Image (tube, rainbow, N blue to C red):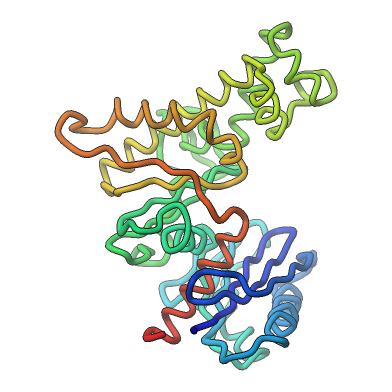
Length: 321
């Protein structure tokens, strides 16, 4: 049995786990991400890895590390990570010096996409696009059973695909990006606006916050929809429409067998996936003459990143295991 370590470095939390070749997490720990420079963060990461593997029997094939930012083509250096305020950080070299094990570095969206394609919602498919709906929209692309990273390691930034000409201003500095219409932030913005217009209908939704539209949060929308709030249900259905529009565009370019939808918003997938499926089927090019990609909810949750990163490392450093 091949075992490897997966690490997910987030802006607030570091998660590390030992993963076997079946995608099962044997042991894991988490640490807070220090508000310090890259070397301080990676010092905590190396300590977490050492603790994670200290009681593991067997040979560790390698370490896979996921970071929220583009990674160079060699999978060694984080080019930049806005949430961590990193630029050109040689993560692999720093960790290999501390741990004495080979290290692969990957964008966290790519790592999660690989985890879902191998062991989660996309298992059994060779062409899988994972869409992660959180604060923004992230994703990863697996084509022909291989992770597609692009020429420079920067592929998969699907949230910044253009959706509306000269539309809403995005955090990237451009206007009209898809994540401004189909992300968790977009969901909250639309819920607050609709609750303002329809106060009486949104009583359940409003009661879950502080009673005002401004107090509505993403988790309130999901809970309110579960309780039958019509405004919450409609907002989630609209999210699904925008999601389906983007998936239709991705289908025209990538023609995947399946889309796997993850991220925090996926907890409400029962409310928005039907409208996403209907919109994709209606807007996909050649809809009368081609198969429509399936849309499944992700299955690995917050552990997709460490499972995917670990498996990518195992494939690179012990490809025959």
